[in-house]
Length: 564
Image (cartoon, rainbow, N blue to C red):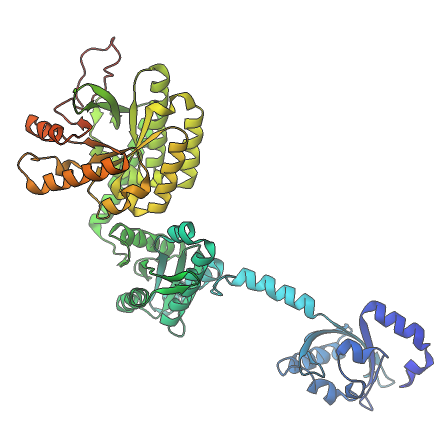
């Protein structure tokens, strides 16, 4: 093929052909090292006509430095095998920028059996490469923070464990949770919450050393893999994170926001030699950090005592599930009486499990295990179903049911409970849900949502064990509940205990100001009852007025109530 090959073809037809295809073509004569280009080549490659490469060295000089050896290697392979040449690389435009180019070529043999000419086509694929890069980035990186995605982070964790196993090294894995991020979403909006997430990510990266891997696990949670790190490095890293979060508020478009984090960690491989085990134990440690008040670090520690407790919990959980399947889970009722007349106004439902002989099992022997294993949601649902059925069959009674923390802060459980109550809407006004103050404070924003939705359906909501939390009075008004139940520790000895009297008097004044009824729990003596009546407490509950009983006082066919 002659170097003046293009001159022999109608240029108008040639231009139209190449413009429509979006490609340019060249003929490279290897012997003379000369390039002949199609008429549209300079526009496709975005270079001036005089800058079109005429020799192979000119061509290579406009390519990205990393791409030159790749193209040369691809050429070498195609020369020795009967396969078409293909390569992708960056090509420098006249303005100094780069385009991604796709090149395809065919080698033609000369008389000596060696390639003497190359006929090639080039086209710009920058848009395609950008899309591919974006997809790769989405798969590998979190689009908000730029940190590794959860998948890539877990791959790094798996690699750290393999390193420990094969080379005898040690590493650590930490989970970092932004405390109460839901509150920022509710009060300020998602843009402010996103700003907080981005800044926390930046501070985590600033604390990390070369070789540490930081990724985003979920909305408000990050993971960190520390290579060559033992217990001391793990603790030091966690303390550094806590310090940097406490030391400076996060600046947002709506002003500075104080943010804390809770951290759980596990060392590898002594406490976890598999990726899933490491994740689970780090999460377990994080839950412990949260339960201790948040804004702290807790490292997973294995112990025979805890392992024995876990096995006991599993056994207790099996017994609970068996009782649920066999209909041996029920509730006892305890009256809550009018503070002035002493007449029962409603009854609290207290979960009870019956053994194989039909005898009640103390709640302390199965409820903690049910909470620890996460099956408390099933028990809450069962109790609510029983209470709704009781309200349907007995029109004149009012019942109160307790709801665990897992249920109160679980959006899926809230949706389920709302659907259950909605199906019995005509009895909703006779049903009260009790949430302990400690639970309410653990995830205040979810509790507010839970309370609001239940009250919208006509149910009443009570805060149980009020006074056990440290932020009680400050948050009481925000919860918009119907009733507050004074924790029993403030009722005992009330007649002679000045501190308890001050607490009760303060609570009553606040409750009256916001229109909330007050119930005093654990009333056991007449002196306590008298002191409460004198202060105007609305309702009283305790053994003085009746112990929890499996018998229903409103069922006249039953014999006298038996305490359980």
